[in-house]
Each structure stands twice: as structure tokens, then as C-alpha cells.
Image (cartoon, rainbow, N blue to C red; front, side, top):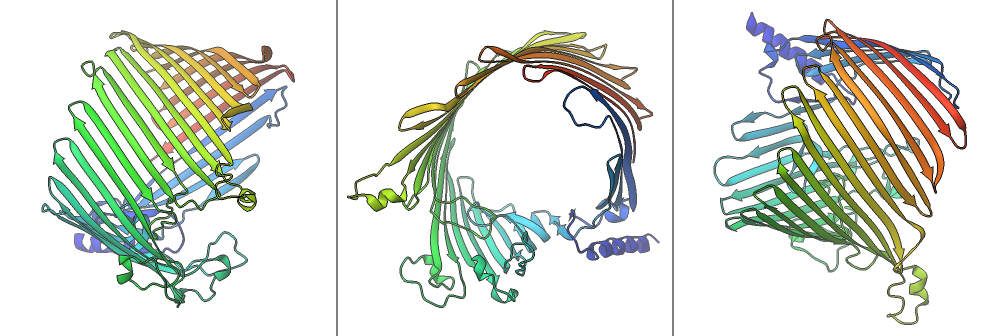
Length: 576
């Protein structure tokens, strides 16, 4: 009897999976053995009813009365498939959503050091080859205790989409198949790896060729070499070198002249085939409590792999990272700096160089006091070369740097958290946060009027928590000052909030009020008073009654005084 029941369950799940045909949720079945023990159908969901009353003399166009009635029900089959139903009803309309069965199946069986991937899955070999691209097919990973590791895949990377001039949101494309493997050899002192990936479009998969949209059948062969060595304790060196051969139109019958690569021996090429290189190396050194990291990356212009959805090319990165702890681990500092540039082959109309630097300092003299200080600087240098300067120049050395444009952004932040009191009855703490941001645009070394802005913010709060009473009180004061061009704005004001859990924590209440003033160029612009109150009561763990009220009074220099009052009353019920 048990055996026949399991067969019925397996057959039901298989029928549900095979009968689907539209886009929906992903299913990940790592093992089918547990389906027979799972509950066939599990129902869960809830309903919510809310009414909102609004009154005010402001310019708001809100309705004076709004009601919402919402519900959702989810049917879970065998612990694997979800069928969600939902509906909503308001005095402005209604809607209903029914479940859409899944059409993507992912099986990931594992046995000891063997992992399999079947169906719609994604794998990653390296950043320059196969990097998270979803495919429909087969894949596996072998990671035994020995030094050898192997990963491989085969499947459809892209399905064929016919060109239809009436459908503008569908990108036509050829059916694309791909396969690849990564072989690794790992020892304690070193790691070696080789990755090969190839993708190829099926020319016959489309009846109408979308050549007018510059979409051609492509072919891509990528090979990547990886190495990582640990020559001494604390020192690790890693590098990766990848070459990508991309044929942009497989139908081209003319032969390529010059610019050959070793990949040309492994695949067919034509005049549309181009080869690109990518290189990355990293050094990390740790000595006692010090850490040093240096990295370099260069990706040639035009580098592309069909095993990734998006790829950044034409860039050169240099990064340096330093970290150190001191004062018996009570303080730590981390410094990071980097330089990036593009236009490596000097063919673009403009070249960009970017400098990034940041520093973080932390100091915790005791368990009750914690402080952090951080600073970052971002600078972008852009050298513009207008085409007319090239046309009108009298010599090759004229107008080499026609326009130098610099963007500078600086950020600084100081945070202090002081636990002033802590015992069995209550805790009290003080928090202070100061932040600064500066942004400016320079042209020819000069910052023009209106091209700079600064932002200063001070946030302070004092928190007290009464543990036995289940009550919390917070008093805060915020100040912000910013300048944009020739204007400056100052906003400041206090905030008081109180929250408490009553009636054996079944009733949750909160109250808050705030008052803030805004000035511009020394002139009062507005004042705003906010009052908020909330209450939520839970009955028998499934029923929830909630009430909230919000009152806001504004005094605007341009619009005068306005007042808004919003009241919400709601009921919720959940089941599972």
C-alpha cells in the first residue's frame, strides 16, 4: 500500500511539472525521495481589511474615505510547488491574481563529492569565461578529496526568437548552444586551473534573418589559465589570463588576415573574427595583524564572452588595500586606493581616468564605547577630444588636451555609540553621527559658480529601554545644512518617540512627535509639526486589530498654514 501511494505521488508531481508552458516560479528539487513523506497539500494565507479616513485643508487630492479588502491563499503541493491566489477590492477598483504554473525545472542532485545540475541552471567557471549565464541542459561538478577538480556543462544558452516588427519588446536572436569545462589541480602550496568555453549560434534556427538590426549568428571560443601560489606563510599570489575569440558573423566566407591567436587552431575563423585578452593578478600578504593587498586588471577594448550577460571591457584597474589592528585590538584602520582608466587603444572621442581612495578608522576603548571614522574621495578625470579639433589642427601635437573635466566627490562620517547605563532594569545609550559630503565639477582647474555643493548632517539620539515594563523612549535632534550653487538650506528639529508592549505583549503601542524648521539664505521657509500614534492588538495569535492616526501641521511661507489628519483602522486574519 505504501509503495503504491508513493508511485501515485511521484506521478502527480511529474504530471504537474510536465504540463506547464508559461513563465512562472523556479523549482529546485534536490531529491525526489522526500516527496512521499511530504504533505500533499498545505494551505496558508490571510485576509486584511482597512479603512482610511482623511481630512485636511491642504492641496491634497486624496479621497476622504478609502477602504481596502485584500486576501491571499497559497496552496503548496508536496512541499515543492506553490500555487498563490490573491485578490484586492477598493472603492476605486478591484483585481484578482491566479497562480501560474512553473515552466523552469532545476534538479540539483548530490552524492558525496559529485554534484549534478539538470534543467534550467546556471554555473560559473571564471569571470572571463562562463559567469552565471543560465542555460537549459546538463552540468556537473566533481570535487573529490584528491587534487583534481572538474566542472563541465552543455546546454542551450539562448532560445531562437523570430523577428516580428509588431512586437517591440522582444529581441530577436538565434538559438545558441554552449559547452565548456574547467579542470583544476589543487595542492596546499598552489592551485592550477584551465577553462575552455565555446558558444555557437544555429544559423538555421531563424527563418527571417534580422541583419537589419545588426544581429548576426555568432561564435565564441574562450580559454582561461588560472594560477594561485602560496610561497610562504601569509603570502598568496593569484593570476588569470583569458583569451576570447569572437566571430561576429559565422556566414562570412572571407579569410582573416593578420591578428592571429593560438585559439585559431581550435576553431574556424573568418574576417569577422577578433581576439581579445583579459588579465588579472592579485597579491595578498598577511603578517600578524597587518594585511596588504595589491591588484592589477586589464581588459582589452571589445573583450566579450557569450557566457555572461554583461561584461565591462576597455579598462585598466590598479588597487591597493592596507589593514592594521593595534592598541591590543581596540583600534583598527583600513585604507583602500585605486586607479582606473579606459580608452586603452586611444580611439575614443574622450578618455576617462578615475581615482578612488577611502580610509576607515575604528576605536573601541571599552565594550560601552564604539567609534568609527571614515573618509572617501572619488575623482574622475575626463579628457575630451572634439572631432573639429582633429579636423582643424595644424600639426599632430596641437590640441592634445582640448578639454580637461574633473569631478570630485568627498565623503566623511564620524559615529559615536556610548552605552551610558546597563543593568537588569534598563539600558541607556547615546548615539551621535556626523556626516559631510562635498561634490564639485572642475573645468580647466576652476570650479565655476553653481558647480559645487556641500552637505552637512548631525544626528543625535538618546535611547532608554525599560526592560521589565517593555517600554522604550527615544529623544533625538537632527540638523542638516546643505549648499547647492549659490543657495543654502538649513533644516533642524527635535523628535520624541515612545513605544510599549502591554497586556502580556499582545498590545503594541507607539507614539512619536517631531517639529522641524527650514531656512534658506537666513529666511524662514517652513515649519512642520508631526504627531503619530499606532496600536496593534493580537487575538488568539491569528487575529490582528490595528489603529493609527497621523496629524501634520505645515506653515509654508508660499502657501500659508495647512493641516492634514489621516486615520486608519484595520483587521487582519492569517491561517496556515
